[in-house]
Image (tube, rainbow, N blue to C red; front, side, top):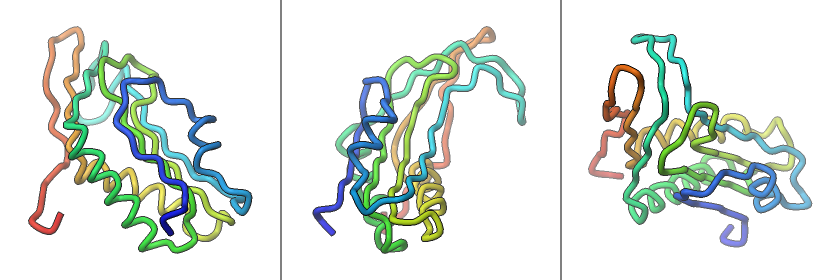
Length: 153
């Protein structure tokens, strides 16, 4: 299992989906599910508003350790998952810019690859310490996510 491709990264660099796909895909893979989060310029749910940009910050060593934990959890739940990429951008990001990628590769699409990618992004939001400040026409605000550390994490 240690020889399976795993990309874990907190980066200021632009996310290149084709490069990530190339890095996590094996000749045995026939399916890759990719979740990509974007900066919204317009929020319509709950408190509708406009966003000029987001500023993301993370404590890289801890965040990457938690991301590696998520990759391990994915492989423990879905034994068919081969390659995994979990990459979070930090810095100043504008609307329509990719902020996060969770990608899972598997030999077939019907072996949990969609569920694994969904689990990856949901778990990232739950346990990875990444902070974001939203800046818009009405000011700026640090947004709280769903991160709730537990003793077992």
